[in-house]
Image (cartoon, rainbow, N blue to C red; front, side, top):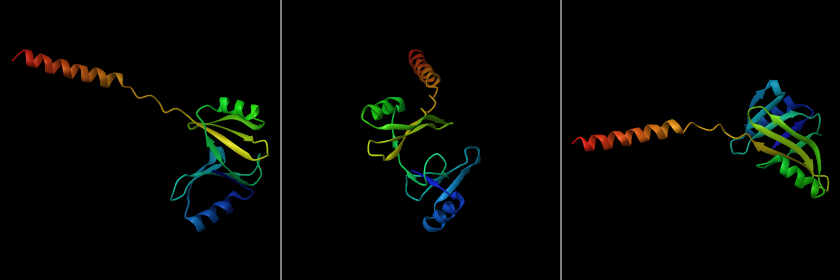
Length: 135
């Protein structure tokens, strides 16, 4: 969920007071992330490209494919795929009735180096076999 406000600081103060939400400011993006006591969290920003209100996000594994489905099903893309540095991508669209929603595609987590672990396990097994033979 993302909140677009005409007065973000006032909205942030209100949500802190009423619900106890904690905010983390991201000045480089002119954005604040929030985490309510119960998930999910979201963001808060100045209403600029979208009117003041709430924007709901739908998780997708492939934004481009989903945007093609949006347009082929009668919807319209209002903001094409854009990167959220270090997190993933988003895009905004409207359904055929004019409801505005957003898509979110998470960035794949970095692959862990498994080869060294496998090599270490193989070496350990070889060591055990060798010690059994020498008995």
